[in-house]
Image (cartoon, rainbow, N blue to C red; front, top):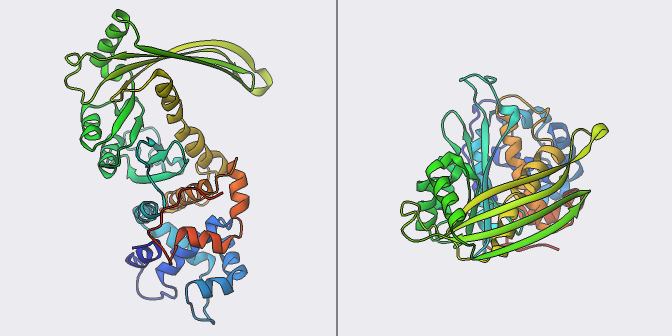
Length: 383
């Protein structure tokens, strides 16, 4: 089943009375129009006007068809269950985005600010999206959406781990997911892990600290850099874990210690000044790697923040989106998942450059999204 077939299989949630446009056509226009630069309800109407002939030809539509109005797009986006677009993304990504053996995959959640209700009280609720992000390609290969009142990020990550069963990838995680069950699921699924280790697992942290203070590192690596006036040295050491030390932590083979020190800017632009910093972080892994390999993978995990979450917040304005009401903020966040991964396929130097390349590229984007001719052909990278 390709994406267009999956969209056509979505049940129409609207009342039968007064329906003028099929749901599959509305959703298809929303995805294709948004990803080619027409972001918003009225811009989508402009999209149908500017590309009328192409849309009719591409989807075999009647020549006299009347396309949806901006209010129709708005009503559908606000009322559609956001989990539907989340499932459609996974259908598309499974067919189009390759997962290579040994690839590094970061898992992390991002709350959608504009979905938050209840303030800071116990009644607070918001929609969060947990993504599986490729360090190398910069695209999202799987995701799940959740409401924090009904499910925890830990549970969602465990479900996503099982979806990657047999892929033989390396999953990188922050300290929230340093859980016995999560790491056991990763090992049982045929994958490996690198997870941040903090005092939320106090006994484990103490055991790691004792090991580091009482034994010699088996390998170490040091890298220094100076970027935008910030100087950083990263000193990485690895310590093999004796088999009897952590029997309850599945696959645990190495403790990794990364010391970061140097100078960085602090304060607002008008009062910026440089300060010294020196910090030490611990990690747990099931891999037999060198210190330089661990150093690269640990730094790569934070690409999910810099190249996905930051891009969605700042470049695509996700947290301050003015298109609110009902499920609109969550649904537009799902559309952004498509947009980010499509842009990464362009393999450009910057995200804005990719957006410029995608603007008005109807045929190119419809091939990447729907690929009616060969739906099972995976995409590696488009120059």
